[in-house]
Length: 71
Image (tube, rainbow, N blue to C red):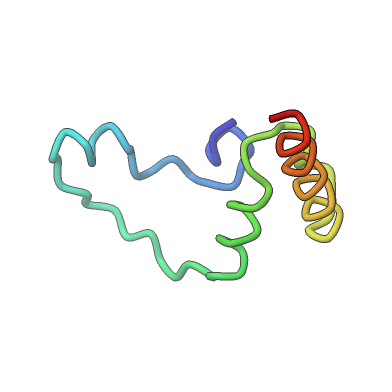
């Protein structure tokens, strides 16, 4: 799930346009690094949207541990 799909982005800046070398004419304003880090940790899992930041950290830690154990 993208940040636009989760409602965490306005979608004003297009990754496709950036990759195509088009100019970005939108001001995105100040970005809070803590919020950005929390969104990265949350990932694109739709079920994580309903969890608090602390709960998401626990869920993702367990997810990583499951991957490590299986591989």
